[in-house]
Image (cartoon, rainbow, N blue to C red; front, side, top):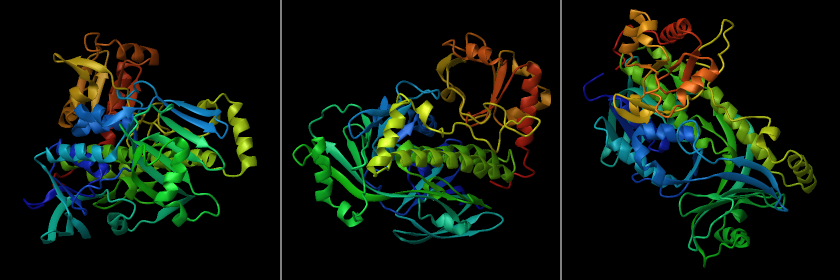
Length: 519
């Protein structure tokens, strides 16, 4: 790698690409982001992220402004045509990751914050107006060719990550097929800025009316979004019309006199999943790797999780601490996780997108008989734990309970500082126990952990400042636990000896690199 080369080139400066750039930049790696458009896209797109996603965004450097970028959604309610509540999702309060369970936001605001965070890193370069035209991978790196405002650009990087959307050039160069999971529905997406500032109750509403399935949700502070499904016999051209948008908004009391129409666009909601996410030094993330219907609010969230998973693995590879084979665990972990998220989204869509009145009546009767409780009704759950890759397995090769799940984020006091775990220790391996880990682990284990930048914590009441973590460990029957650098749980341990075994397994799965030339 030459002096003017980069560690990572990221194609696409959307939320996923910018998050990955910041996560890597904050670890000191040289990153270039190439974005084809000269200025950020100004219109709304994604409108929801969850507490796990917020945790990653905070780690990317926007935690201090995150609360100002969105509004918390306490409830997501589904009603039938008669106004009866069919399903009610309780999103109130703070999630295990230490952030609100559901936040509604305006994507251009989020992208501005992420762009500022990325550009604030000395090792990160963001090149807008640079359309990548070709990639030439070799054993030593990747040559990236782009067309910039001043003409052709040629640069090199050790790794290239395509965060370049559904029509990804990087995915094309990987040469992978994309599996169509068989879900297609056209919807008119309408974003408005109300002038009357009235409260909307509930904030997020799904109307399961066979006459016109409709979504009405927050579009972030001061904004609202409606989504209207295209009906049989209705053309996309007819639906995607400003007059149609106002006509469909009128029953909601939204008119040109009470609101500004920010956007109306017909979208085909679909479910698609790339078969391969890595080929040598090329990787893909976000919409380049997967698309899903919006009904579970997991499209953006899944892309941000991709960035978090890639960041810690690229970090260790670039630092020469592990070999590049660790990157094979990225698709092993993320693809199955995303496939389950797509399954949930499609399942919800099949409940919503019913236009036959008799079928809708049977659906309503079933849902009403189950007290609007999603736990009683939905056969599929949103995934929490990764099930492949870097997880702790039992003797039969099955991941142990909890392994691969995001660890709760408590407040701790360390070295006189009190704050959330992530803010205090950073994106590193954490070994924490009610006994001093130094007294449990071998000298070789401690040395190897230190080489990885790990933090070893002796959990005592003075550290567990809110008295949350120690009771949680006791209830689980554990004396300690090991976290991956993305602060997903690798495993808990019931005894000090078991803790040493868990650490040994992690170190086996993070083998030393034979060379540091990967940088």
